[in-house]
Length: 73
Image (cartoon, rainbow, N blue to C red; front, side):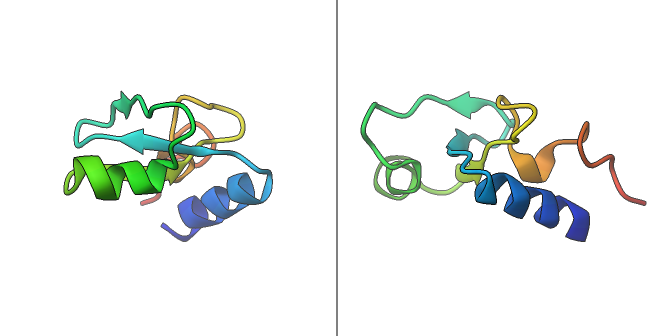
């Protein structure tokens, strides 16, 4: 898990935006001009997360990108 968190930190440092994900790992659209974290807190609630996008795979949250950080044993 440490490598996943490090990858997420690197993507955040690279300026990647947040992506809202539901329980099934699907992206949830966020209205233009709305902060994804605020959208989760104000409109979606439990079961949704605002996570940083992967710098190399923008449709995937960085912390969950198994291409950049293969699953650890």
